[in-house]
Image (cartoon, rainbow, N blue to C red; front, side):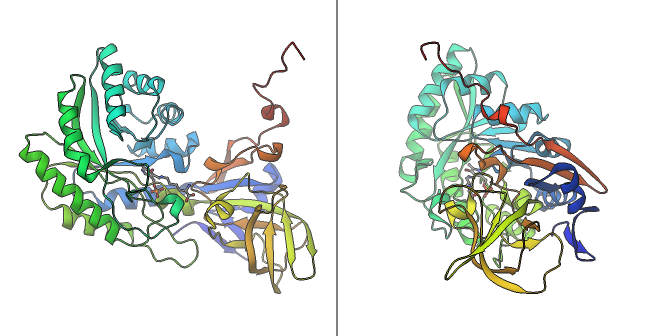
Length: 417
Ligand code: LLP
């Protein structure tokens, strides 16, 4: 459920008409609904309330400070994958004891930053990373708390670029090497092994892969207990999918019930790292039609947002619903919705039935809260769009539209030129 609804043929975000925001902010811009974000977060978190658990929002899905602040205010944690994400999470007020750090390529500087910040845990993804962390923690006179990220090798049905739990993916440590890695970790003076983790992929709309992964993690947990490890945390990652078109992912309650059943009465804290399921349908991208044109066999609607603002359609062939901001055209046509970037891959929808948009019309590209602004770039030297948050009748810019000066920030022409 989200709070983007039509009132008298005008698209609203909560109690604010989108056209009202356009007047103040221009286009393109991302618009997020505070009520949707908080609702999604609470539903997800509360689905696990009878379990000792921590919900760590996956910062990579949307890393705007104002968005992160909402989770900080709800005592949520953060799942981070870089020093930059740690910086943002801390700035937003997420407490370090609720921050977990994944990623296959943590640099020494990032490890130091995370250790000085006293984050809760590193999800370690290789033996070499473990050794590096041990050395760095030792040099700092500290102990690093870690979970070993296991690749549980489960079948998932999602886009190949966002599958992470198969043996050919770069993530985690293989099942067969896992116990050995725990043994090496135990030998390291500056490592405190406290957890087991995995993340099997993203936009999963079926519950079985999660349950299969959990079963495999539980098996390892039993082995570790026999080996006298004191494992306190089981981190199942993120990955729960959302409805972009007609997908029917399990409701967080159903997901939680199924997980709890498989988990049984383990004496551990369950960590979850949801991103998309919280923020995906809490944001939309508003853009304006510049021109329309037709070729022999195609009709194009050219808008002022481009693939640099939202790369998902071209990168993952993903579907985003296209809706009018004002319902004015009853005629529907089949067209491509494209941007101004000089790439054939610069599209939001192909051969899609949509209202017969005309120049000047405003268009909403739906389900653009997750992996949308956070994956935006300046390609074609296009300033990134503004971001706006709506709360009831109020709205506020939470990131200004970039300027041309922002585009060249940090660039220098050397003296020898
Ligand atoms: N935890 C870890 C370790 C992850 O790698 C990810 C996502 C998550 C949690 C959050 O997953 P979520 O709940 O959002 O599915 N750019 C792609 C998605 C990449 C996901 C990467 N990892 C897209 O636009 O679909």
